Amino acid sequence: MIALAILISSILLYREAPREKINPDHVLEAIIVAAFFGLLGSRILYILLNWQYYSGRSILSLLTQYEGLSFYGALFGGVLALYIWSLKRKAGFLKMTDLLAPYLALGYAFGRVGCFLNGCCYGKETSVPWALPIHMGDPVLRHPVPLYAAAGALIIFFILKALRPRRPFVGFILLALFAFYGILRYIVEFFRYGDTVWLSLTAAQLFSLGLVFTILIIFAFYFYILPGKDKSEQKKPQINDINKTRKERNKSE
Image (cartoon, rainbow, N blue to C red):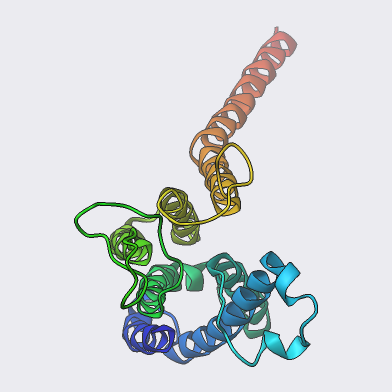
C-alpha cells in the first residue's frame, strides 16, 4: 500500500509541478529522497519506541523487514532529508513541501489501509455496528482504527489541496499538515489499543498536543504578533518626523 501511494502520488505530482513552476524532475527526486528516508526514519523511531524488544537484536533488523513503522518518524525523517536535499539542489524547500504535503496525507491514508489489511494498529473492544475482528476467526470485535485514520487523512488531503492556492505564506501547507495530523492522531488514539503514560493519554497523544500547540504559536506569531510589530515600527518614523519638523520650526523662528 505504501508503494502504491508513492506511485500514485508521483504521477499526480509530476503533472502538478509545472503549475507551481517547479521542475517535475526535481519533484521525482524529492519523492525518492523523502520516501527512502521517511521509511528509514519510521523504522528507527519504531525501534526506539520498542527498544526493550529490539535492544538484543541485530542491527539488520533496521533494514531487513519493515514489520513496524511509526508515521511521526516518517514525517520528520522525510522532511529533514528533503531539507538537506533542497540545500544541495538549491531548490525552494518550503515551496516544495507545500506541493508535497497534501500527498503525504494521501500516502498516510494508503498506509493505514495497509495496517487494516495486515491486522495491526487495532482498536479497543466495542459493540458499535461497524466493529470488526483483527483477523478471521477472532471473536473479539474492535474499532477499525486504521480505517478511521485513513478517512481522516483523506479529509486532510482535500483540505490541504483547497488551501494551497490560498496559502498566506510559503510553508503554510506543511505547517497545516503538521497541525491537522496532530489533531487526527490525538482523536484516533482514544479508540486505539495502547498504553497510557500520563493523564490517561498515550505518548502519541502527548506528542500530538505538543505539535499542535507549536504550530498554533507559529501561526499566532505570523498573523497577530508580526502585523502589530510592523504597525508600531511604521508609527515610530512618523513621530520622529514630527519632532524633526518642530526642531526645524524652532530654528527658523
